[in-house]
Length: 291
Image (cartoon, rainbow, N blue to C red; front, side, top):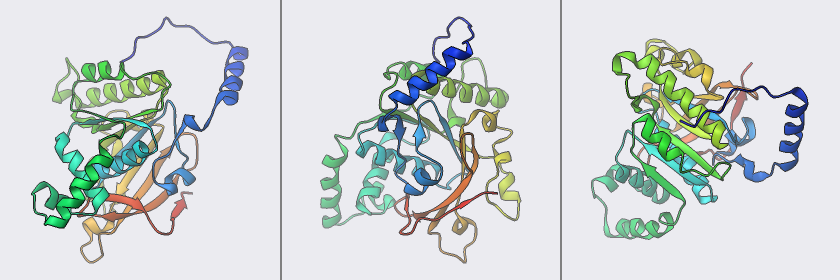
């Protein structure tokens, strides 16, 4: 996605000097909050050049998780580029309105709201409108790369791709899905490093988790979908116990850290509001370090 330079090695002395300069020059602007204090405290804020993979089975909440994080980041002044390949842009804005107002997403999209709720919806639009968000439904890797090229390197920006399995690569078809996914994952990682911004990507996990008695996601669930478990710096797996077990409330979104290249593996739990498709920090933060 980014132009390649001629191959060259960096001497150790130069690498150490670069590291020291980076340490001396780093500021708070080089770290990106997620909007979930449990994540930021336990796993660390997102870093420049990092690729975070958010894996889940369909309808588990990966779009909601990423959109809630993106909304918090836009409110903090971070420029968000959101590639929405699965849903129309209007539905995504509707989700933001639902998150902000607490009005059911289905009611908003079906126009089933009363006069008071209509006022709430109209009232929140001027709050959303000036936020630094950019939307695209481009699904071709080359065209996505061209849009990446409009992002200023080192800027206070972050990219979301929802989701990786819908990105197309010219010359490769669905029968070569493993190669497609690997190529897309590598391209997004190179873009993150080249632009020095975080990139967060939704990934649909394979069906193995649904065949197990314990349905919590595992790192191996990324397999058969390219080399994603190798490429990602952080791999998260989302799980809602209430989605599978009807005898318990569907009010929690469990976030499993399946890989953390530069830190501890820590799982944490968010509150889940299904009607509003909203993930939020629980009143009392909850996380558990993985042995």
